Image 1 (cartoon, rainbow, N blue to C red):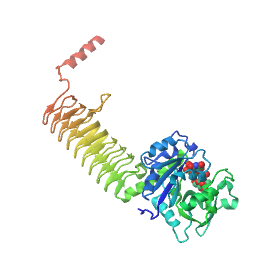
Image 2: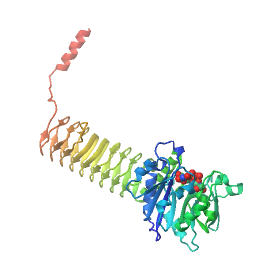
Image 3: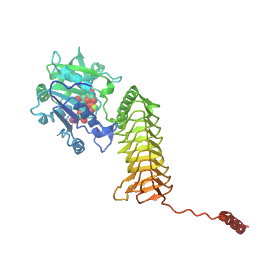
Image 4: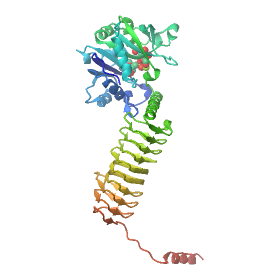
Length: 447
Ligand code: UD1
Ligand code: MG
């Protein structure tokens, strides 16, 4: 973990681009990676630098971005029309009035830049030769249409956009990520000097490099600055994130039987000696204690799983599921907003919602909590050590006392006192010989 920079930091996140290639009604920076919007990834990383101000520059779809950052103290600046990256940064100037320090310029569609890299950029700004601008560059296998960084000994002469570059410049392997750190006392004056006399007719942020007294370059790995412009690139960045997270899980003592089939969320917490079988999906908000086994094809979201519990195969844990120590949740069981006590078992084909299930209670196959009447949700309580027979419907609100037994096939609509037996089903009738007589009668008619 990097420590905050000793100098005040402000962050500007550029997100005014139209994101046409996503072909989406959702703003590009709100598409999720690991279950969290790209923009939220960036804001979370920036947070570790204790920034004085954070500004997001948006164009179209700004209502969506405003709603996404509401209440977080993030300033939303508007760039309309979009006249280039330099023009975009200028739109943040008003929001940074009175701010003196380092300005980190980030792209909303480059969401996984690490705090460590940001810190390297900021630290370089305060190196011996104190450059006014620090450019984050990378060396991809294929330099494509990235801007080229013309540098010598770590000092940048200029950045040339691909469409403005000649053959010699296009041959330069060092590419501009677009991300920069700039001292605020230089930034606004430099931006005032840039024009739009170039191939794109845009105000290029990159032009401040040649105008600055000194600009330095910091390099990073291509994966870290991979931008997202299409659904394909979104999937590629997701895949990279997942691969890294799986490695980390295994390094921390988690067995992944088939790592490439397991999907984590940005906030998944896993204990030691957890085993995750193939094809398990972790949505946001899952915490798994030590020695838990999650069997194949389970889907978990907003769930907390206690030590030694077993979940799946084919289990679905929805938000608010709290699985106690050594409890068992078996196949085709859905649990939502329910607490399962230590050692409790729900092994087959059940829906348990809005419920509290006591320690060591056993819910038989096909037990269903009827928690919703079409208008309100009601609660089911099953006491410790209670036993609910198979195919029972517990019509909430209802309480089954500690140690009570519910006969199989019951529809329980009234509370059951502790240690009682509840039978709530049609009484069985047996008529001796009826079936044989029935068959004989039918056969006689046919003949
Ligand atoms: C930019 C860089 C290029 C670099 C590349 C890396 C410039 C002039 N060029 O090129 O050197 O290699 O990124 O991907 O900076 N944006 C706005 N308002 C605008 C234009 C862009 O907010 O008017 C935002 C976009 O939403 C995006 C970022 O700035 O997040 C980059 O824009 P993009 O159009 O992708 O820049 P490139 O032309 O690819
Ligand atoms: Mg681009």
